[in-house]
Picture 1 (cartoon, helix red, strand yellow):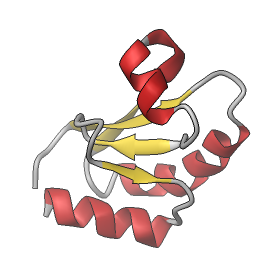
Picture 2 (cartoon, rainbow, N blue to C red):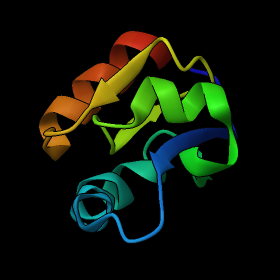
Picture 3 (spheres, one colour):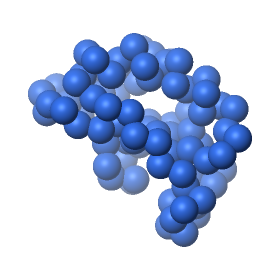
Length: 85
């Protein structure tokens, strides 16, 4: 398993669903040795176009390979295992 990576949360200011997503994300960070890094899609034209209507989403760096909301902890864990082992 890759160590010390970042789990990117694609978000924007005032995203209430993003706060709900964080509750599912936090318990998995230590298990996968990840840090949560929030990226505001409003700061990047590509990300704004890509995620405008589908945030929150989480990924490991490739904005084309993301786990989309709604997800629960189990679904996110499965997604992470498939990518990190």
